[in-house]
Length: 306
Image 1 (tube, rainbow, N blue to C red):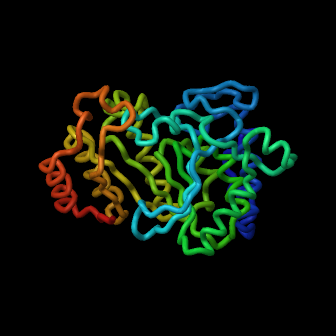
Image 2: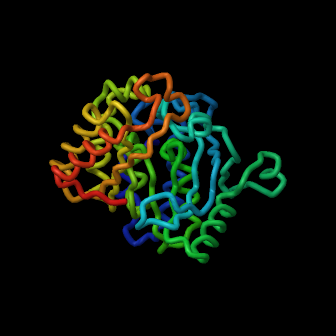
């Protein structure tokens, strides 16, 4: 049974851990007809079928650690990076892990698992990972972030992890904003901040560089929703040769539709993974392009943060 409106199922008085636990169960059932991302594959992941993300039913993660490389207001942040992604960005800085949904260790629900099972599967229980996160908070971390790859494709595991965290922890959902309306409903009320990428300003660049059709419509829809249901921070990575075709339309749309939203305009591009398949991405962004991009942001009154 597909859940279309979890907010009508769960009482408002439920704590976030309880809400996340119940939604994790529902999200797991939805893997039998998976529509968690906007590719809308509809495969039965519980039966071993895979869609464009190649993810199965079991989540994996390739990193879990405290980091200080994100937005200043979020750091230090304990970050859990889930493996696999529904997009195929040729310039992905973690391409090896982000393109492989089985990279790293399994992140497993605690139901029915014992120590021998976890060891055999190279698995880590969601409760164990939550204990690491709580220890990080006790030692100075300000926030807990779930990211990828793309965490939406492993929404059941992400929600299971959240169900074991303190109800008052500040939680960040780091996403490519390519999730479905179904995924949004399951996420409603779970994360305090959406940290969302708006990578491309047009569908042609998204298809050529990330094999993702109908990109702009989906991302805009998700950003508008996220702004209404949580705090929203938008990231855009400046890419060489893409200031006019990507950053300008992104900036103009943000200025018109989300004028107060915080935007982190990142200029640290380098040609990672398969970036050199595309001639314009074979180098770092030039000083001139960088100045043009930030000048445009100031001209449009974009609320830039670091």
